[in-house]
Length: 66
Image 1 (cartoon, rainbow, N blue to C red):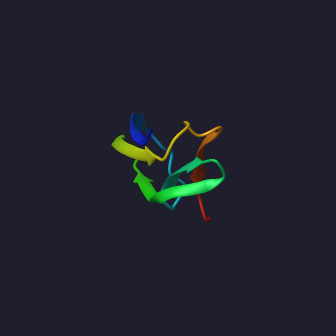
Image 2 (image 1 turned 90 degrees about the vertical axis):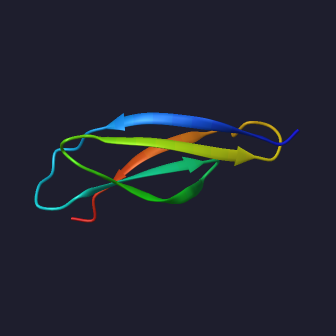
Image 3 (image 1 turned 180 degrees about the horizontal axis):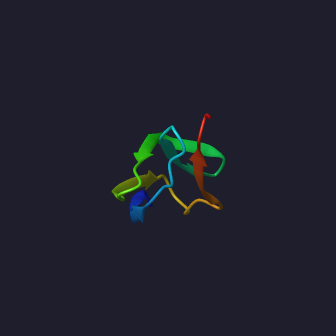
């Protein structure tokens, strides 16, 4: 049965001359684009659809290109 789940996160980052991007990965595929995280805090609410069973893996990554 198709459905969705919602993640509500409060993220903080210590910046060293660049911003940090936050990524959400489900079953090895990135969901949507990255989210820019600030040192003062960033609230994110993401609704992720799924077509049946819940994902078998969920990853949270900070991608700092610098």
